[in-house]
Length: 336
Ligand SMILES: Cc1cc2nc3c(=O)[nH]c(=O)nc-3n(C[C@H](O)[C@H](O)[C@H](O)COP(=O)(O)OP(=O)(O)OC[C@H]3O[C@@H](n4cnc5c(N)ncnc54)[C@H](O)[C@@H]3O)c2cc1C
Image (cartoon, rainbow, N blue to C red; front, side):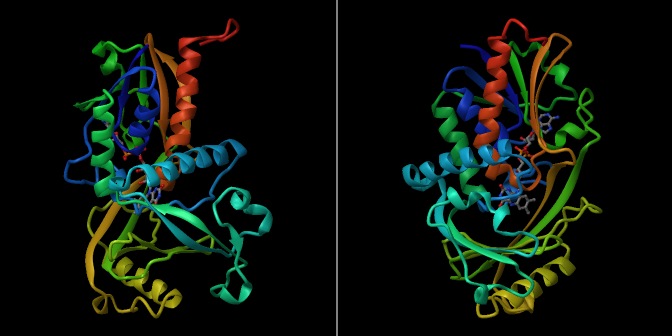
């Protein structure tokens, strides 16, 4: 059993703790912890959350998504109090063909939708059983689950990963999201913050909906509790935590074009109960899952998953576990 410290208590840090704590002693240290009032300083509390398959650059990434889906699907059955629920999605794309839909063989109840159901511009439509969850319920619940299985949480802000050297671990996991821009010995220039804004309304609408044109994407995520999250937006020129009402108006305009019987184009005609503004940790060259030996400290990096932290969660965690095992049980020819 090794001692592992994970820096970061977002979905990536906690999913990693969930996998590693089966065989190791795990402590999570982080500036922001589940249960805190959400702030713009971290991303996980602001997510939708829906599981919409896709956006994978390789077979390895697709495998990570499927690993995460399988785990979350099991949890949706085993732990109703986690807020994870099963839901049907209608998912439309302007820039995909049938060959791109790799998840057609995996997602429950998958089928292609007939063209007459497509929104304007869409080239393909699919339907399958997927998952949603509420981060405000799920994150504290997940923390509690981990604590019960022996994972310790400690509030701590690091200036650099080398600050952690005295914590007594064998291996350090860096799951700091966009914190890896400022950590002095990481300063990842490839990482950028992509601002996302959603609006939460009261509504009985109960089907997950997505239309991705390749440039913009419009979605409705029912939380199956009489509320729905509407989006989406991607902004690279702002890190403001304040609600941008131009974006709110644009979201309602787009969602009204798709689901006019459920949502009005005029924001004031909808029953708005909240807004979410978060910064996605986006890495131009893709998520960093990599081991590094630095100043005598064994580090596994796990950050930069942009808009899919939940979708990839347990898949990334398993990839991290494999690298932890490479550190613990190196093959004779390993260089690190
Ligand atoms: C509007 C919006 C909607 C989204 N919808 C979805 C969705 O439907 N599905 C989906 O899968 N994803 C969605 N996402 C993306 C998802 O939220 C992110 O991919 C995910 O939260 C990233 O998690 P993380 O654990 O990497 O980072 P974070 O959640 O940011 O966690 C980072 C952790 O590291 C800690 N930390 C950082 N720096 C330091 C430091 N120096 N010292 C100590 N601790 C530090 C922080 O305190 C925090 O605990 C959405 C995002 C947004 C903004």
